[in-house]
Image 1 (cartoon, helix red, strand yellow):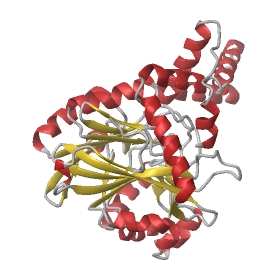
Image 2 (image 1 turned 45 degrees about the vertical axis):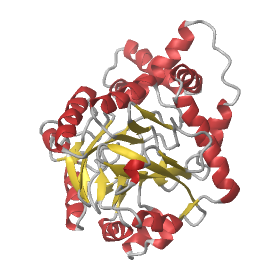
Image 3 (image 1 turned 30 degrees about the vertical axis):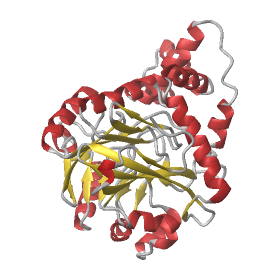
Image 4 (image 1 turned 135 degrees about the horizontal axis):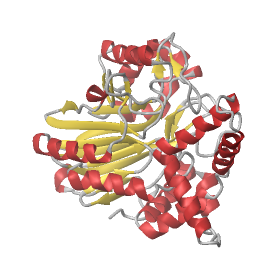
Length: 407
């Protein structure tokens, strides 16, 4: 149902555009380094650049705050880096137009329980709202209601299971429970004007959603969600209209300073969405392609750069529209992640030696346990074993590198 190719704006229901409200929604935001310094001074233009007027033009701004807001805390033991930012960034983030902060992600509890609770307090003190996080599971799973100029929007937020999860008695991120979310969506559909589901999931650096993810997000639409918006892979993925609902599989990074001198090509460029919403439907969307320049400032893509990005995004939308084709691309992409087998093999080798207190064994056991509880890794291991089970590794799609390395 997506016009291909498109120029960045798609109208799905012209009649519903009359009186529509607008939501600006982003992928991963980590206000660190130069961005942290500038935001603490109240500067917004030097961080959000030419994207800033688009944010301010919308009736509601939502971002995925993928870090802890604290000056203290102790880093938890986990896979990946521990990320935090100075709480003084909050007034500037509010000033920029963000009033809702998604906390269901794999960095929101990076500095422990107290720092997570502190993060929620800083958001509230600045006048913002948060969703997908709480003092315990019951609290973190709660729906957030926003009155967007008379439209009652219900926001449900969850993340793949990982080290920042809350439990029934401890604070943290709301862990993804697809049946529970589908039931929650069905309930909210009866008492709200617009149900928005925000999910943090998907294999990092892979621009194609796995079968599990496509099934989950479509189930949320079947249950009554008007839109499902996702992030975490740090790269753009396609979007689709399914059963009347809009699904964006990954918005990629919004503003996330690179962690190395040579980040993946997709790290500093992706897109945000301007949703035009009316009762129970997305009337239209506007894709906002953007990039982080050398001065760590966001800028809207223009000219040939914009056209090339939209061309690639169009290709990703076409791939998502064909389940068999999407599986082919995902399976081919999975074959480059050889470190999974290395960690699993090493764990069993150390287990056979019998020293279960060996620090190296415990470290490898931790990695393998992370693979087992975090669904983005299930997807990849399932794809790898499926391909290898068939004894012959198929020829990858001719344009696989185009999407993997140029996005």
